[in-house]
Image (tube, rainbow, N blue to C red; front, side, top):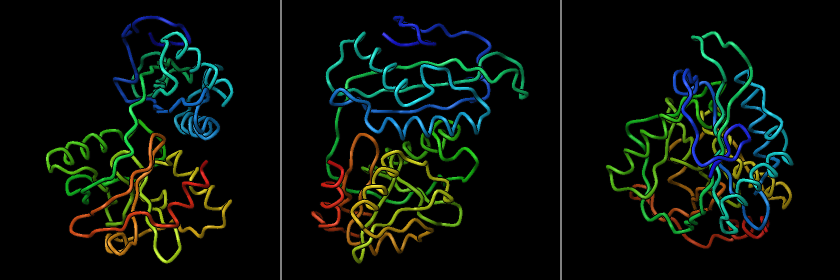
Length: 269
């Protein structure tokens, strides 16, 4: 069962023309429903609103606010009779046909859900990507318009037998992991790349920085070299589904159980 333009149905028709397929004229959002609530609902709604504005799209009422988004997706979960924890994806694309010139600001959308499989395991081996770099753009903060980058990165990770891959920008600055934000700890400070590297403005990233502020943990968003990541005391990646410590980056090993990471995790509860 899925939600297609707010209608529950077993399958979604592939109408043509479809600007999502023809021009990637849209975006998507991935979320987690747990404990009867949409995790980080306000942050997801804010990023969707920002993405819609950047693409000159109008969010439909069922997706236009945190409350509406949570209610809409809860309806889908109930229809599918899924367990208490689920992974959801909302895909939006501009309605109508045409060529590059957009004929409308209206959207079509599709929401799907599946049982959430948690993976909090340690990342045994990570390394820097050699074939793909992040690209900063007016849309690099959201998911979808530059998805090809992460497909290429995932392919390289798979071919090299890595557990995680770290992307840099064209200038060599550390940007993000293949499907998560990257953080590291050194000298009692939390570090993460700035959005100007072209990394996604991750919802868990925003939440962790908010937790750091609330608990007076110093943090820095900036432009960092590979050497600075190698010099970290501890490294971890984070997305809405999990936080996963990195044991090894290339030939550099990191410690587990860093007290600052434990403080962040405790602050999230």
